[in-house]
Length: 269
Image (cartoon, rainbow, N blue to C red):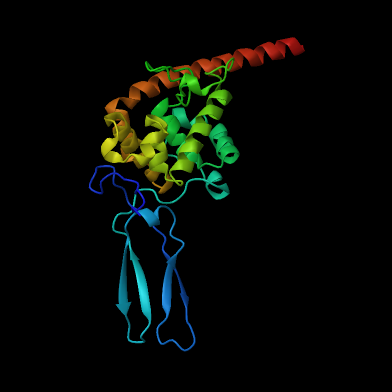
């Protein structure tokens, strides 16, 4: 039987390499009548079965055999950004003001879709920088830059909640296909879910750049850093133009809110 096909991850020396957070837990059981005890590596989150981690055998003075997991090819994100615990993660301060503008909704979407709010914010950051009115030359629409074919007939593609629902459904699908690997889910959001199993070498340049920006910004956000060097790099590379437009759109939204509030107040008199 041919060995199972392995997922291909970006090369370990690629510029998107980040500090790794790996939790290895070992369960030790001693068996009566046996002079050696087996230590079983377990609880490793992510794709440990596909990463070729090495198991080295060590003999100690007490004749206990210990298996040590050496992470030789760990992906950047092995911790799943989904589930009830991830959904209530605090929103990092590294994101721009235009993304923070949507903070309450980002937290609500995180709880609703069981996705880390910082991953949602990362998506908004590099897709629209918080502009709910933007449309791309390829036809992607709104806050999450969702392609038109993801919407049902009659749906307002720029309406924020509708746009979020379609975007979150697609992101959730990518997380499912990548076993919760945030970097691969982001790549799938940009290049289609098919890229998740195709491997870095087969990705388009745009998807590679998207992985670079998104996975690094997300990692820096969840690390507790006060600022994201990668986000600053993204802004300098042209993201600041997108954010300037987002700021203008949000000012218009605030003006509309004030007008609506005044109209309601006048009607109540």
